[in-house]
Amino acid sequence: MGIKSGLRVLCLLFLYLNTISIKGQCDLQLLDVDFTQGTYTIAFNNTENCGGTGGPDGISEIQIGFQAIDPENDCSAMNQGWTFPSGITIPDGSNHPGWMFTATSAEMPISNWTNLYTDEIDPPYYTGEVITFPMYNQYQQDCSEGAQWSTYLTCQLQDALQYWIDEGLSIQVVIWQISYGPTMYAADGGWAEMGANGDGTSYGSGLYEDDNFEDNWLVFGPCGEPFPEVIIDTIYVELPCDTVTILETDTLYITQYDTIIQIDTLPIAINWYFYDTTYIYVELPPDTVIETVVEVQTIIDTLYVELPPDTIIETEFIFETDTIFETEILFITDTLYITLTDTIVEYQFIEVDCATGLPCNELGFDQCDPLTIFIPNTFTPNNDGYNDVWEVVLDPGCWEEVDVKVYNRWGDLMWESFDPYYVQWDGSYNNGAYYVPDGVYYWTFTGRKINTTVIEDLQGHVTIFR
Image (tube, rainbow, N blue to C red; front, side):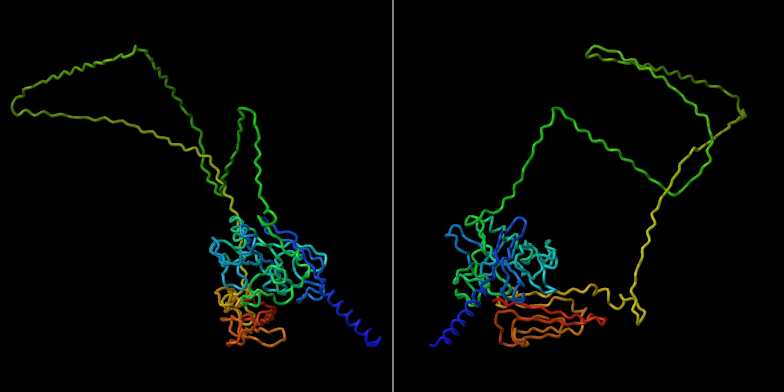
């Protein structure tokens, strides 16, 4: 081999080693997980060459995974299905049995949850940032009993983790995914012991972007760091003896009426009568019985007068009545009723169609304002009954000319739907017998709002896990 050939080999070797060193610069660190406050903190020590759509120097997506660890079995991972008291389940036959995940912090404008918070946690992420993310109910859904999302993991994650803690188990928390890349498998020194390639084999597939992955997980409980404790401190204050606390509240009720009744008032003399009643109490010895005898004497005298026959007695009765009733009734009323009435003016705004002059509610506009649409960013079409289809959730009666398309990374059309009443993809190629492999696929959504010329043009990506 000549000198020039040797130099050429050294240059190529240098370029190869330099490429390897640059590719290994991606470095993240899981600093803390607070189960009480519901947060996790990640330090982005170096984000260069972390893959994904974040570019050569940014990270476009993060996902966190949780797994139960058995302290009574050498702190080994519990790769099994779970049924929690709240009713949510983790199927034993899922792609990664025993694991639960947070929602991904993606860049998609519709289904991304990070845009509900401060700009700090909205991707992409760059070198030097230390960010604390929310861990529970990241979509800020209504999680009350009976609500639409109350039975989903986004509302049930906190209760599921608390169940593991109450059972005395440890919990392993890991940075499961970086920029939509593969996770770290146990065969390569990582944490995922089952489910690679969706066929149950234990060997890894793909490349986890962070070479220094040892600081990308934490273990809490008997097998690791202690769980945070909630301490309730009771303060006792000693008061002086016979301390009386008097609360006085002056309540003033004012009733004002806007009605005035005026009645003539006449002065009248008032006669006051005072009765002096004297009670005499005589103390008697015990067991004294007072007997009162009242004598009533009745004298009846009967006078019989004998009259001669055919005697007529004429009796003249003269009634002299001189009764004078003098009544003077005076009402003294000096009552002022004042009623103050707040005047409430209601303004009703009616939108009128410029072409027809009819109110917009007669055209059906009020039922579709505001328009809402939800497009998920992942699903698992493995026929386990959970998340087997990717569905665009919208109100079909509010859309026209809907067109949803899904492409693979090379731009080939995998699936398309024009029906707003049925926008569900089961992961098959053009609804056929062939199913596309796991990975990231890109979607587009176009549709016109009903009775308008407004066209919505959306796009994003969806990840398939099996």
